[in-house]
Structures are given as C-alpha cells and as structure tokens.
Image: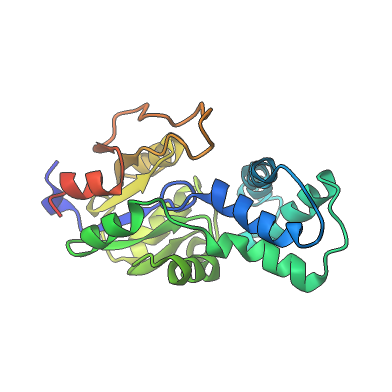
Length: 237
C-alpha cells in the first residue's frame, strides 16, 4: 500500500506510546514509600492495570453509561489499595495517585518517531484514556499530538466500532485514509474490521520480560514494525 493514500495516523497510547508498567510502579513507589509502605511496586502496577479491561465492560455492555477512564481508574485503585492493605490516604493523596496515569513516560523511541511522522501526517491518539488524561500526559512527556481522539469523543471504549469511526469522522476522512497504530493485535483487528489501515508496533516488554501476549503481529497488517522510528522509516518520514 502506498503511504500517499494515508492522511492521518492514530495511536493506541497505553503500552504502545508510553510504558505504563514501570511509570506507574515508580509513581506509586514514590508516593507510598513516603507513607511507610513497602510493596512489590511492579505487582501493584500490574494489578491496577489488570482491572482496566474488566472495568470497561460495564460500559461496553450497556449496563453502565459512559464514564471517563479517570473515574474507572479511581474505582480500580481503591480495590487495589485494599488488596495490598494500603490505607490512610487522604482524598488529595488518592487523587494525585490516580493521576499517575496522566504522567506516564514514553518509550525511548516514541517522541522522536512521532515528531518524524508528524511532519508528513496528522497524528493523534486513539486511546481509551479521557481527553484531560491524554492532554496532561502529552504536556508531561512531550508527545506532539495534533488531535486527541478515542473513547471520550466517541463516548465508547475500544474495541467498540464507534470509537474508531468517530475519530475518522472528526478528522473528516475516509477509513482507508487513517492508519491505526498499536502494539496490541486485538486493537488492530477491531480497527481493520472498520476499514482502517493498520500498523503493528512491537512492544515485547510492555508487561515485563516474561510477557506472553502481543510479542509479534499475529495477523495480516499493513505495516509491521519494531518501534516508532521503524514505522517512520517505512512511511518515508
């Protein structure tokens, strides 16, 4: 496929653009160590993230109206704190801890790769994160988005087709003019099913050295890449 057909690239963010696992572990460690807690910080991070998909199912199934990911993250945090026997945090401390997701650090290649891609294409998010979360993260970590798309604009969580299609519509483009970029096979398959082009970006350590899923592309995608700069290379940026 010629990249000349493409007008915009949209990205999954958690795991694809930023390293949520070590970022959250470091944030939680920095805050809770000061409160006298000594935990397995990576395990805490993974437990919090582990509630991410299940917490969105109520919205996807229609049992619950759309609520921002910040709300779901806080509900999930309260459960994880109880599981790890952490108590005594003030409302302000809980809010700051929950906003750790607004301060995630990018993978080493993300910013340079995105800056290259931005010179040729519109680049934006296609994330389940809410707009404030995405904007704050971009400011914190230097992510050069042109536009924030995804769950909150669509009022739906991926892989709901509405999420992808709303983003395409807001850009005023056709589905085959938009390239969905992600490190997760299921995200790309869902986008491909709606007519978007697809790019797999390998993040084989998103879940640590023993990661067992999304090690490689498991389907036919338009681009299969090793990192963000490899994608920029393949798109001649």
